[in-house]
Length: 196
Image (cartoon, rainbow, N blue to C red):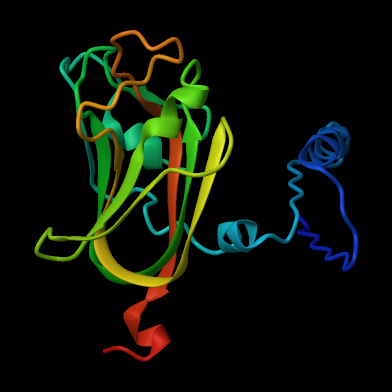
């Protein structure tokens, strides 16, 4: 029978490399299935809540249908991924949450080989009529980008992508290339924040 153990250590700081090493050491034990450790930052506190994008209908603008399906970015499996082609101008990934939620943040994990290319991407939120209600350049460090919206934003659609022919080649060449292992959207139903 599996046992879940949670522990909170107040007043303790370990950098992300130390946490990753410690997690791997614990996960390597034969009596442990999984281990995850994180600092209690506002973005990480969101991660322990439910991913609203999990298994919801998603789409991706790209030039070639032979690339992996958009749903690989919200299948709760960080070992799968989806990418655009290198010439997809203003390519994006978008999820329909099915209804309007009070959104607090997004975690975007870059696909293999993408890393810092996502630093030019924009997170854009849309209401139920698909009118833009929020946008900001992605924040964080490769390969995991955490964005805290600084309060609830009421939205139904979440898009992560390039806009205005923004390029992604670190050397400045002509390249428009994005990809994701996972995009997680965090928030709460509107009735939980007093809106019905």
